[in-house]
Length: 149
Image 1: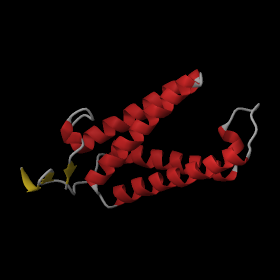
Image 2: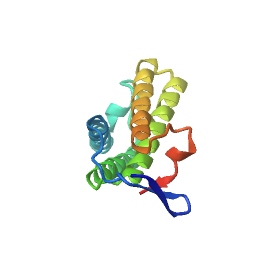
Image 3: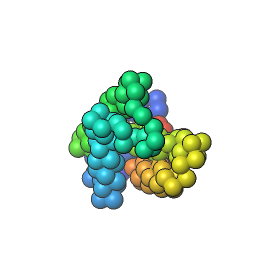
């Protein structure tokens, strides 16, 4: 089935409610689990977020609480978008979380945490590939960013 223009910058694809590929669903669920785990660690045991020689003070606790709310909000939105088969929303969330992973890897480089840099890069790459699978375009192409329904 072809595409039709519904509204400026909104394109309707005939198969937009089709199930997502299994690997995309697995990636989304895995990321939601990791985000939830990170959120709970931030709230309940933030000492795990810093090196053993560092201490947790009130400023760290404030930022850990913000990390909790943001990570949990992203995890919930990923699962809801997946459950609703909201392709455009899920694509945007996956682009966002992929970018976050690359920025985390950059921050790890700045802080010389070389052992975890590859993890951030691989996770970011997987998420951008999954987003490309949903949108049909790589993230550097405008079609990946336009809303589709």
